[in-house]
Image (tube, rainbow, N blue to C red; front, side, top):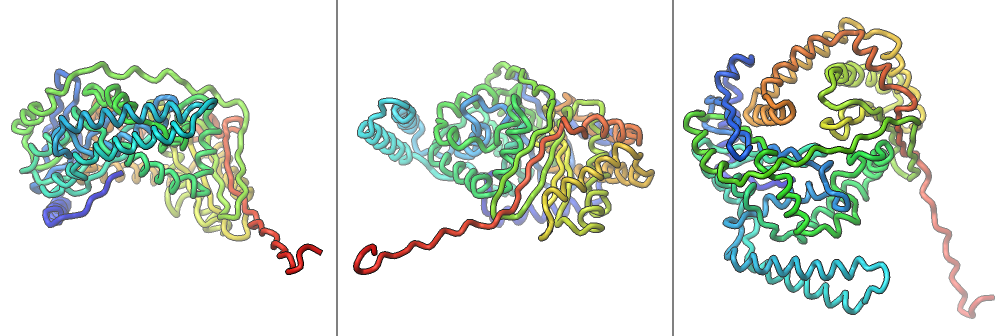
Length: 518
C-alpha cells in the first residue's frame, strides 16, 4: 500500500466529504441508483461506471483490476503485489526528467540484472569473482538510471491537487487503486489514471523490491501468527494458488525482475480486465466524454484466460503445530464454495450468528461465559472468495488456557449449528445487520465506488448489489443447519496452533583459568 502526507487542499476535501456525509442521503434503493448511474463499455473493453451524487464538490474513484496474488505466475509469487507498488512510480511522462534517456538506462539495468541473476542461480560452477563483477555492473546501471528519476512525482501531483486517501491494495482476487479529489480536478485524475494503466514505467524496481522484502519480514518472518497463517494456508491447499502467501515466498521475491513485472502488466492490466467506478459531484453527460478521451486510446488486448486449477476435495483432517515462546493461538478452516454458490448468503448468516460481535455465540461462550479466550472470531471467504475459500475460526487463549481448549469449545459451538436450529432472534439480527451494512457501504462516495466496481466485476452487473438483499431475506434456519452439516466435517478441516514452550536458555560457558585447562 502507498500512503502520502496531507496538504491544505487535502484538508479542504476532507471537510467537503464530511459535509456530504452530513447531508440526508438520497433514497438507497435500486430505482434511485439506476437514475443516477451510467455504465459504458468502451470499444477496447474497459468498463466505466459513473454515479452522480452532487451533495459536495468532490468525487471518489475505484479502479479494480481483476487480477490478484492468485494470478502470480509460478516462480514469481508476489508479483501482483509488487506491481501495485510500481503503479505509483510514474509513467513515461511523470516521474522522469528525460524518458528517452531513462528508457535506455532501464534497459541496461535489465540486461545487467539478467546476467547477474543467471550466474547467481547456478547450483554448480558458480564463479564468485564473476558474480561480484556482475553485481557491480548491475548496481552501476541502477545508479545511472536513478539520475533521471523524480521521486514520488505521481502521488505529489495528485496530492497537490487535493487528492486524499491515495492508496492501493492487492488481495488474492484483485488489485484496487483509489482516492478522492475535488470535482474540478476530474480531467487531471483521468489523465493520471489512464497513464499509469497504459504507460507505467518499472523505475526503481529493485529498490522497491527491497521494500517488499522488508514488508514480508515484518508481516510474516518476524510474526509468529504470520508464519502460522502461512503454514496453515499452504497445508489447507495442495493445488490452488490460494496456498501461496500474497506477499510472495522470500526466494521468489528476492529474484523477481522488472521484466517479469512488465509481462504481468501486459497480460492482466488490459482494458477488458478493468472496471473503473467514479462517484460524486459529476454529470454523466459531461463526464463520460472526458473519460472516453483518456481511457479509450488504451490498446485492446485479449482478456486473460480463466484459471483452470481446481482444488481437489480434502479427504483427511490436516494440522500444523508451531512451538514457540510466544502467545498461544488456534485457527481452523473448512473448505467452502466460491461467491457464486447459491448458499453464499447462508455462509454469511453462519458467520454473523456464530461470531459477529459480543452477542454472537463464539464470543459469549469462549470470552464472556467461560473466560478462556481474549478473542474469538469466525469469518468466511479466506483468503479469498473469487475461488473456493475457507470458513475460518480462530481464538486467542487467555493465560493458563491452551489451544486445545479453544479447539474443543469451538467444536462444541459448531456442533450446535449442525444439530439445532438458530433462534428467530438470531436470524432476524443477522438480516437486520446485513441490510444495514450493505446500505451503510453506499453512504459515502468511496464505499459506493468500491461496491459498484466490485459487483460489476464479479457479476457483470452492479445491480446485483441490491439483489443481495433478496438473497439475505431468503435465508432460513434449515439453510443454516444444512450448510453447517455440509462443511463442518472432520475430513474437511485444517487446523493450526501455536503452543507456548519456555525459551531455551543457553548453558553458561566455562572460562578457562589463567593457567589453562586443568
